[in-house]
Image 1: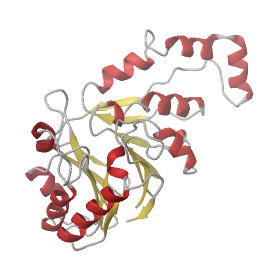
Image 2 (image 1 turned 90 degrees about the vertical axis):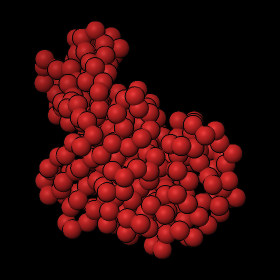
Image 3 (image 1 turned 120 degrees about the horizontal axis):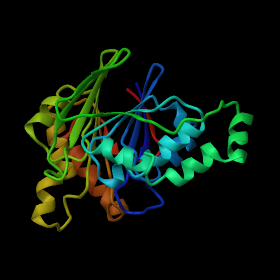
Length: 282
């Protein structure tokens, strides 16, 4: 498995970090977890194209995890890719229809690209055939506990506390070739996540605050510190830990030193702070 970090930031607009998105490659499959703002740009910077994505899984539907969804689907469609396969919690099917349906937000663009003579000719010149179909992602709505069998890999999920009851929030694990990768989504630590994480070769866990932050209790309840995450990873016998979803104020030299000190104090394996476009072999 090869992991490429396409977005390691938060909802904040920030030149250093795109919002959330992680690409896991297994054989010919390119599996994207979440698709926040800036993720498509970083996908292209990494040497891939939107049409390369074979599977898209959403952990939850905060915009910093899915605002580039429309761009990804539209760009893959414009490259002539088959309909994208998408899994996510409700209401991802309705959101997809509101974007790409006949009365959707993007319908004026799609009418122009499929019905105007000049646009049709551009499509034909690029190797397409007429009539040109509209984008039609193959959407499967899922709930915590969902599992999926891919070509040589198995995905599992669990519920994690984050934005309920507004929508379901999930963590995912993938096992392939005797290795296990876990992506926490945006998650408070909970027994189901600990179980899903058990024995992982690589844990990618969100981290929205530092131990030194003065933060409202409602946020603190759902946002573990680097020390909390490190202790959980140690107890679950994780081999490697990476914390992600850093906010702007956390990216100072002092913030990084604080986070790394917590990781080192409570986790015995390699651990660090994620950065956009890093690549890891698992």
